[in-house]
Length: 98
Image (cartoon, rainbow, N blue to C red; front, side):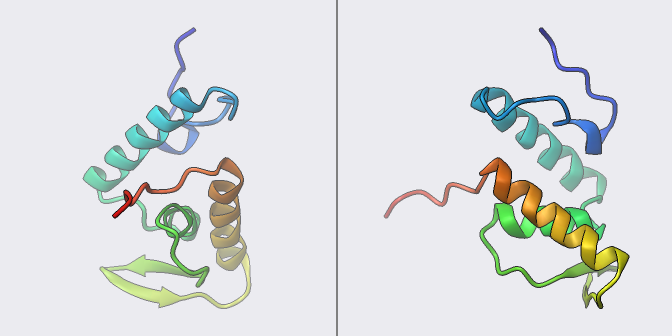
């Protein structure tokens, strides 16, 4: 059954973690489209990206190419949701083995 992509942020909704290949492919598509379109600037996106690249959980967003730290509030919560979403998904960059 094909997956319907209603938008970048909806690309993985409805896909279960039991089908790792689909989840992996959907994440790759989402990441590529996000990078090419200049997206990945929301607090949620930054949180998910930090988790994916195994970076520290430091709530921030990007504004005009600059990192802006977040204070507690809605954007802080969105960053945490993005980070926790990817942690639960367990989708992390494979840095290879030396």
